[in-house]
Image (cartoon, rainbow, N blue to C red; front, side):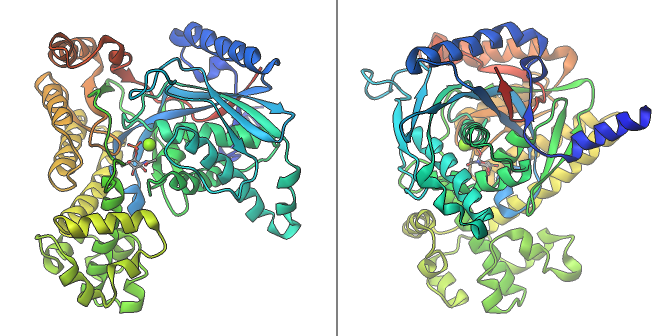
Length: 511
Ligand code: NG1
Ligand code: MG
């Protein structure tokens, strides 16, 4: 009997399909009533609009990244955990051959208060249609397209493409609780929730790893050329564990967190500007890392043809020979700290910047901006990436350690990560710096920005015993202060500071 239990547990672990779960297995007891009401409200709204109950609800969580910032797209492992803040989508068939998408949110548009913030819309069922950018519906369309394109690619020998014209339509109604632009990955939660909803209604079955890979790719249709952390953790999160996520191929390892410590998330309430025009700071960082990889590879005598094809700093580290374990020394030796500009880069690489990024419009825009401004900060960006990648493994090790001062050591590494994000990667903001400072002054072991930065949230590592006092102090010194001065409105402060617990990943909730 025990053997069969062990077998069952192992099966559960190795069959990486999307789970079908009941509400009480998704949320903590303390939030169940609130969640039941929320789900009931979504069903009711759906029924009001479409005249029938939805078939099921799909759910995908946001995440907090504990360590490993801006290194996923460079191929390095990261350490996030899924949150209970999530996106839920009610889903049903539709007789017309198109997709109706709506949102239960009553929020109004910031610029035009006569319009809802999340306007309903109709999307085509033809997955070949390009994604229209600039609306929340772009993420829905990207996810739909991602699922169907992957299906068609996987079944290309069976002529799957003849399937789509005969597709039925569907109704999707969304209720999201991950605050937008907060660095907690509201976008990927939406993409993943839609992807599994579409899969489930079309009876497609892919593994979590497959879904994570194609969701990472399809979210790029919206414009941010991101790594795969957010989609992977949203799909592969597990109750009670942080996850070390590896890439190429994507894989998640459970990391138990030390008892007695807790990660508190605090939102600056200033939205992240990572994708803001004209340059998209985020895409510019990805471009800078690619250029750093090429320049470093050339300095290591990697043949030009090969060097120009390298995409990540990790691939370069693998070519460092006996210095593979000390990339910082190599970097110091082979690159200069001053920014690189076109005049230096093009003769070195033997190609035009535009030629190197010719396949990607978003990168070309970033190149144009970098070129017209202060050049490309290759050394600083690479220094951040290599040192941050090492910190991820150190923290993972500390989580497994029995040393007494592990809380302090983990905290110190987190604060180091923040400093690196601020000074080398230039992705912090005055409010993020202020919150990190306040967190440390109020007894946190350490604190750092989380997610892309340039706004959004910090995560602070705090002793479980003092967390309530900690939260009160931060509330008083940051939120109350800004509320009193009129900088914030009360409505912005929902879920602004809360202790987080590792929650389960995406699932389907039958009705
Ligand atoms: P957020 O902050 O959730 O937008 C972004 C990227 C991640 C990762 C982090 C920085 C997306 C969808 N996600 O996250 O892949 O690169 O920044 O570590 O853009
Ligand atoms: Mg995002």
